[in-house]
Amino acid sequence: MSATVERNTLETKVSIKLSLLQPSEYHTQQIQISTGIGFLDHMIHALAKHSKWSLTLKCEGDLYIDDHHTTEDTGLALGTAFSQALQQLAPGMKGIQRFGTAFAPLDEALSRCVVDISGRPSAHIELDLKREKIGELSCEMIPHFFESFACNAGLTLHVDVLKGKNDHHKYSILMIGLKHRLKPWL
Image (cartoon, rainbow, N blue to C red):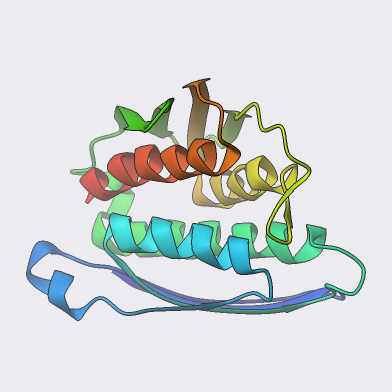
């Protein structure tokens, strides 16, 4: 129920160790994330924490250019690790609840997250973000991270922000909704 993934390209070096924790292991959860992009670290930390994953993730990327390669390659590597760990937990995906839907509120914001562990990757992310960046992460890279994750995880993922004004809240409810859909698979 764990996976170790190394992804090395001309632009990045990503290393991941992911463990999908069972309820009796929740107290052992450990999370260490370092991508060089504070808000991306925050985003992934929230996903791991609430999905009950232990996760060590390090990415060294070409941030002197921009945040694209670091964000994309981190999403791809994390999706690969999730897929490998899930295959160990449930070979052939037997015993996994394939479909799931979650609604999540945060103050003025509301999101809907629908996941299908189909093996047919597809991601449709509508966040309606207004800012150019949150911290040092370009807002255009937030949906791209989840598209990359879904691609290598083998998920069909639909996320919509139904209402909201604050971009940080819109992102946060994405994480809340997604964690509610990834944890129950286990």
